[in-house]
Figure (cartoon, rainbow, N blue to C red):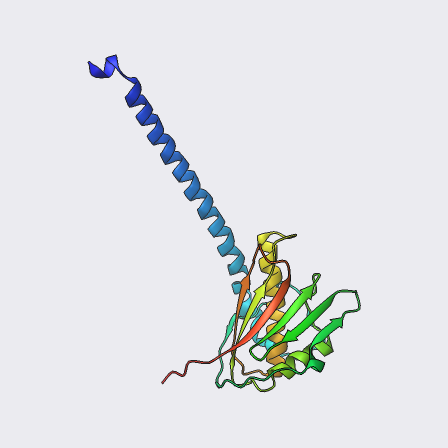
Length: 210
C-alpha cells in the first residue's frame, strides 16, 4: 500500500544505483583499455628481443639503423663492480652540430652524463661517441642506469615511448661497443611536463651476491 501511494523514492533509488554502477563500469573499462594499449606497446618491443639483441649488440658497424625493430633487452647482465667516477674536462663538454642542422648537447658531472637531443635525432657522430667514451673510461666496472626523458608536447604517448626506446637502444649499443661487459638498465620516462628530450646516464653500484 505504501509502495503504490509513494513509488517515487524507490524509483529514484533504483535509477541512481543503476546509473552509478554503469558509470563505474565505464570507468573500469576505459582504464583497462588504456592499460592494455600501454602493455601491448611494451610487448611489441619485447617480442623482437630474441631476433635482434645478440647479433646487433656486438656488431661494430659504422652506422646505426634507427628502426623500431632494433630492440635490445632493457637489462643486460654481466659482471664486475666498482664506483670509479671522474669529472669530464671542459674540453670534452659541448655542442656538436649534425649535418642536417639537428644537434646533440653533451654535458657531464662527476656522477652523471646528460645527452640532450634537439629534433628527432637518434644516432651519434664520432665526436659524440668519443665524449661518451671519455666519461665512461674509468666506470667500466660500474653498472649503468639510463633514463630516457621524452616530452609529449608534439607527439602522442605511444610515439614518445617508441622514440624513447629507439634512442635508448642505440645509446646502449654504442656503450656496448665500447664496453661489452657493462650492465645497463634502461627506463623511458614520457614526461608531459618536460620540454627537452634527453638521456641521463648514471652509475650505480652492483649488488654483490654471495
